[in-house]
Image 1 (tube, helix red, strand yellow):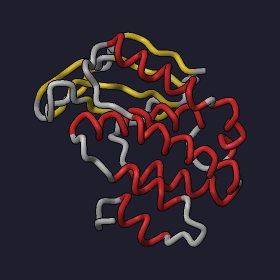
Image 2 (cartoon, helix red, strand yellow):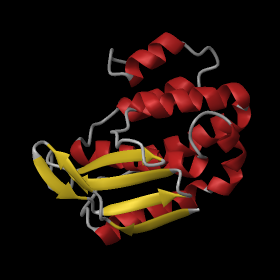
Image 3 (tube, helix red, strand yellow):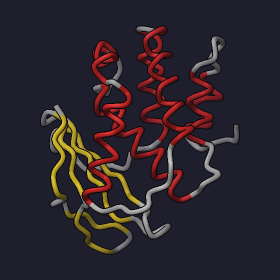
Length: 181
C-alpha cells in the first residue's frame, strides 16, 4: 500500500542541499522522493531508494527491463498494462505547479486510472511492484512532458515493447539513450 507524505528527504543536487516536495513509501520496500528541478519552473527531479539503500535516479532502462521481464512472464496482461500507460502518455500534460498538493493528486489519479489491482499479478515478475512501477512511470512521463512538450522517448519505448517481434537491442539502445528511435 502506497503512502504519500510531505517531503522530508534532503539530498544534494547540483551542489545544493534541497528537501523533497513529497515522499512516497511503498510498503517500506521502495521510496520515491520528488524534488524541485531546475530545467523549468515546474520541473521535478525524481529519486528513489530500496530498503534504505543509496538513493538513485530512475532511468528509462530500469522500467524498460522490468517490463521486458513482465512481458516474458505474462505477455497478454503486460501488453494490456503497456496500452494503458500509452493512453496516459498520450493525454499526459505538463505540470502547472509542482507543489505538494498537485503532485499528490497527480500520483493518486494515475494509480486510480490505471487500476493497479487489475495488474497486481505482474508484481510477481521483474523487479518492481506494479503500484511502484505505475507511479514511477507517471512521474517520469510527467517530468518529460513538463520539460519538453514535444517529448517522445518515453512513448517510443512503450510502443517498441508492444511489437510482436521485439528487437531487444533496439529497445535497450533507445531506453539507454544510446540511439534515436
